[in-house]
Image (cartoon, rainbow, N blue to C red; front, side):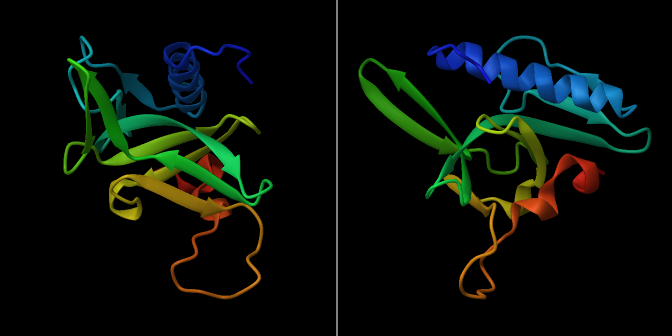
Length: 142
C-alpha cells in the first residue's frame, strides 16, 4: 500500500501494478501518449482491444464495501467539473488500496460517478448488490 499522501503518485502506483499484473498474465499492454485520453491503457488480448481506465478504490463500511470513482474530476480557474467516461472506455481496472487486490469491470457494469462492490456477503439479498469476488482479476479478465 502506498505511504504517499499524493493522489497522483497513488494513481501512478495503481496503474503500474495493474500493468504489471496484465503483463504477467500474458497480455500486451499499451499506453496512450500524453494525458489527454480518457483511458489509461489499451489491453490487447490477441483478438480484441480494450480501452482501460485504471482506478484506485478503498474500503468503506468497516471493510464491507469497495468504492471507486467512475468519473473524472478537474478544477479549472476554481471551477470543479465532474465528467463520466461515457463510451470512451471499455473497462475499469481497479486496485483496492487497502488490500492491494485487483478487479476488472466492464464499463457497462459501473455507475456514472461511483461504483460500490460488496466485499462481504450482505445481510439481505438484493438484485443490485454486486459482489467484488465476481470481478477479481483472476476470473474476470477477458
